[in-house]
Image 1 (cartoon, rainbow over the protein chains, first blue to last red):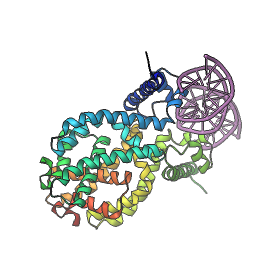
Image 2 (image 1 turned 90 degrees about the horizontal axis):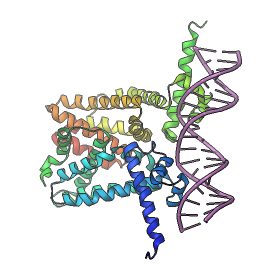
Image 3 (image 1 turned 180 degrees about the horizontal axis):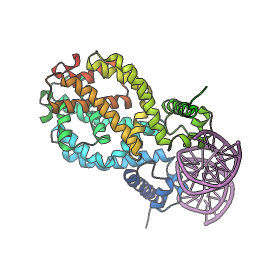
Image 4 (image 1 turned 180 degrees about the vertical axis):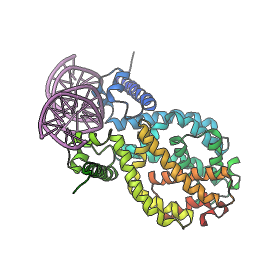
Length: 183
Length: 183
DNA sequence: ACCTGAACACCGTTCAAGT
DNA sequence: ACCTGAACACCGTTCAAGT
């Protein structure tokens, strides 16, 4: 028989709403997805969503966290490979949610919650790049500049898709200076 | 006495509306600026705007064109200076309208008119960079990769402001490989 | 605690009607 | 040709009321 059944149900219902939101945001876009549409997909009334989340921006953050969590689990598999391959792998993975990046930028200006998520995501990406470069004899200053450039390139390619060859040649331009692409 | 007075008035009124829109979009943001607010600033009724432009996206394009035209006139002064200085100058100039870049990306997905403007803007920037690099002994392939990277860096710095020193060090990372920053 | 029906203030846009 | 008042369909969000 169910001990503490309530919290269990609550988490499940919240997860359903967030999952529905994540799928719809990713497929149809944030603005194009109304709270009513999400509610419909989750089997509730629009105003019910507001019992689970503060507002639509909080729902966006929850959806982003869910998508990021799924991605992070898979990313662990890529631990051993060279930096450029890891970046290309992330790019491929993020491409499905490409429309969400400009949404994050746009909403960050008016939603502190989204801005906080945005900062965290950048810190995560910077950490991946700088930890790679720190193992080489790269100065801290150049680590930071390279990490920034990689982040900009990732966001750039998500906003302006290019074929595999062009993508690789741009990343090599950033990383190949001292053969860093192969590390 | 006024020959063809009508077209004159029409252009003036349109310019008033576009100027009001450009200022409000830039200051308060595209989504935060309602058609009613623009109409108020231009001294007309909201629905009157629809006699001059197709919809809000067309108004965005008109506003972007106006802002770009002002910037292009000033940019001509920078003709002689090194590429890195030209990029830093553009960055400084675009900073005031930084919020519009994520708007352009977001609206491009659903408005062909905005997408077309977006493509044109990138072609413009790519042209500036590649024409600089073509004067050096840089291969076409590296010209393209560098132009893309510069564009991504510009958009990146607009979305994620950095201080002057960091900005310069990132741009130098892209351009300094063969002393290109000084050309 | 959880969910709803009904309403609120607002949005971009349309259209018949005026001049 | 130009402009408006009034309306339309929709939006995110709130709230009193139910269980």
